[in-house]
Image 1: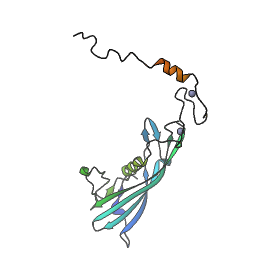
Image 2: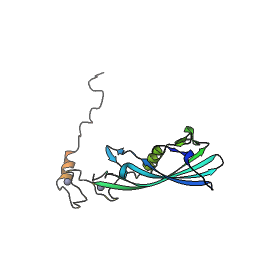
Image 3: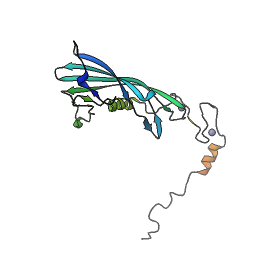
Image 4: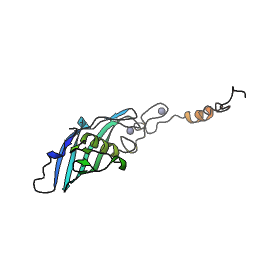
Length: 180
Ligand SMILES: [Zn+2]
Ligand SMILES: [Zn+2]
């Protein structure tokens, strides 16, 4: 489902109601790496509370995001729990562009696809890791440091220091050749 029609909601007796809708979530790409929700679909729980012409929509979801660990590239799974609110007055989101808010509802139609996607994106940790203390890969040879905790290269440190980077290239700067 990409859009949800608020007019399909039924409020039999009370002023609130619930609906669970399956929403397709396209893969996320971070730094060239792809992350997907299982099956490409998230169950978005919509709760609607009605007061007069105003509906307060609460969207919540709980899912996983699967993709490569950003440190070691092994499979990582991040648990995502997110919740958002949308205040809808006579069929339209009340937040305007001037508020910097995102408009998810217009003409009684809720853009559940974009809403779910934004909720997931906002709930993600800064780094997607296989585990919090992932040791990553050896910067020299690419070995998996989780599998080889004692891995190191004895000669590397001293060689790096002696090489001294590209000292000398900073000398001169601009202006040479112009003479003036
Ligand atoms: Zn990792
Ligand atoms: Zn190494």
